[in-house]
Image 1 (spheres, rainbow, N blue to C red):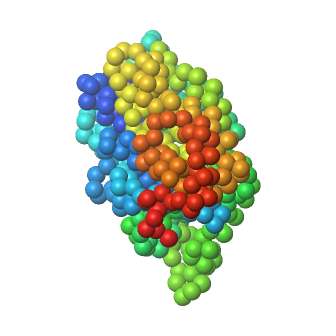
Image 2 (image 1 turned 180 degrees about the vertical axis):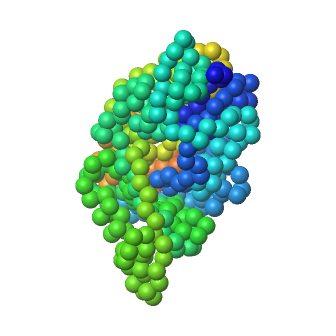
Image 3 (image 1 turned 90 degrees about the vertical axis):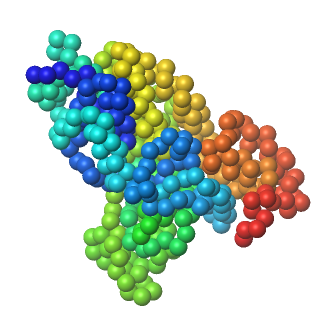
Length: 391
C-alpha cells in the first residue's frame, strides 16, 4: 500500500484549497470527497475583504455586488460596494476541486468512514495510507469528531433557505435584522443571475426562523407553497421553482473556544471543521480558502502545529472580536441606536468601512465613542455624503 504525504478529507473550499496548495508545494496528495458537484446552504457571496486572493472564474460568477444593505424594522442602510462577487456555490466549489486535481492531487470518490494510526501513518478506510491528515469535511464531520469534541449546538448557527426562481432586478445583497426581536441572527436576500438565494441564519434552536423567512417571502413575492419545491405567485398565478436547502455553521459564543488547538503532530483541521467562521454573521469562505492553504503550508514544513501560528497571524483577531461582541451587537438597544443614527457621517462612514473590509479598529468601542457626535449630527439632519443622493 503506497503512502502519500497528505490525505485531505473534504473537497469544499477549505479542502480543495489545501489539496491544491500541498500539491503545488511538491507533496503527494489524496483528496477524499464523494459528492461533487453539490450545493450548500450559503448566500454565495464572496466577501469584499480578502477577495483579491479568492480564485473565482468568470463561469462561476453570477453577478457583481453593487451594494450591501442592512435593514432593521423600517430603516435601511445601503452601502455601495464595487468588489464583491456573487457566485454559484456548486460551480465555484467544483472549480476549486478541479484545480486541486489539476495541480496533481489524486481524487478518491469515497466518504471517509475510518481512520487509524498504524506505524506512524494514517490508514484511511482500511486501504489508503498517508503521513498527515487535513480535515476539511465541515462542521462536526468525521475528522472533527475523530480528533476533537463536536461543536455543541449552543455554538452553531442554523442556516437554511430557498433558491427562488425569480429573476432579480438589481445586484443588492440584503441583510434583514430584527425579524425575530431579541434573537441573534438575520434573514438574507442574495440576487443571482436568474434567481434569488434567500434564507435565515440564527443560533441553532431559535424558534420561528422558518416562519420569519416565509413572512419575508410573502411580503416581497406574495404567494404560497403549492407543492414540494414550488411557489405560486398571487399576482399572476405563475408557478416558480423554490428549492429548499439547509445546514449548520459554526458560531462560537465564547471566544475561549478559539484558544483550543485544531492541530496535532500529524493532523490539522481547517474551515468549518476548525470552527473558523465569523461568529457574528457566519461568513467563512475567505477563512476556509486561506485556512486550507495555511494548513498545507504547515504540513509542507513538517509540522502541522505551525497552523496555529499561521491562522492566528492572519485572521484570529476577527474571530476573537466577533465572539466577544456578538451578544452586544444583536441587542435591541444597540440595533435601535445604530439604525436611528446610522445615516450620520459619524456612524455610516464606519459601517461602510466595515462592510468593505477596510476598518481596522475596535468597532464596538468606536461606536460608543462616535455616538455623541452622531447624535449631534442627527439633530442637524446631517447625512453621510454617500447617502445624500439616495432615497
